[in-house]
Length: 153
Image (cartoon, rainbow, N blue to C red):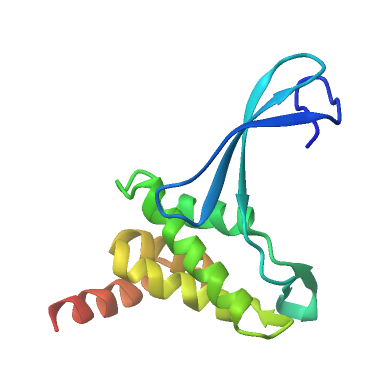
């Protein structure tokens, strides 16, 4: 692992332990050159997955990009980072274990929508407004009314 401070290639692991949800390994490292300490997190990646976007563009699955979009939808909603991480980890596991080398971005969008629906209705509507490309206030009203009706049932 390269040191983020001096870019030296030789660092030593000083401490290693799983995170609370046991999906990540937290490692404390120390650079043998400058002595700086830093933390890394390691996740299991089962296989490389390609995301097929609209217009048949393809790109590799990017967990960080997914985290950012979900965090944006949940911003100022009181949804914990841990809960967001659980949602993202669940989606990543589903995508990687599906056995398909290519996954349409629409399927991932629906997985996020399903997860946010369970977590926070406002975050769900925020994400839907971008994902489904709402263009008018009426789009929000119609979608919000379906969310409200589902909550009443």
